[in-house]
Length: 160
Image 1 (cartoon, rainbow, N blue to C red):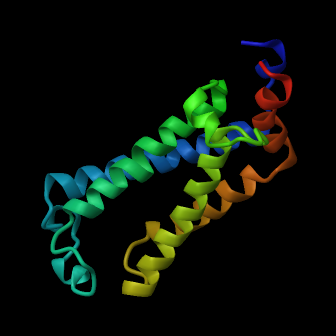
Image 2: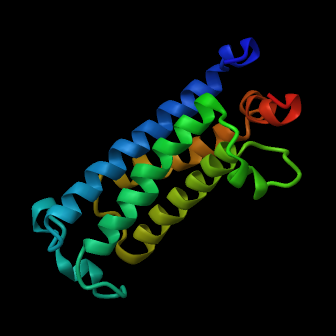
């Protein structure tokens, strides 16, 4: 690792911590839904799904596993190590921001939209809804701090 990468800004460390919290929540929710797609084990009645295109919690559980479990974990790895993965960098021809920074922004937005959809469909039903809603806002805000933006752009600007 280059010496300039060894000093990670506090905002980046906080962002990584928030993404790890999201990972824990994603894995916990996915585990509950995938182990018992009826929702009974988590206290979620199937009636919550009446206005949705799914009949049980299998697909929402898979969504939680991939989007809020695996993706934030990969994003933390990317933000921490800033690996140069040519195929992912090819999606960013201007090379202004590292792919992991873009993934963190996307995760913040998706989390905010997910919680907003839950509130729209069911209202307040679970104590973690507002907590994860705030977490999404915090993730997004941390991504746009100058320190995190500069750190995420470092590999692309220096060519390391």
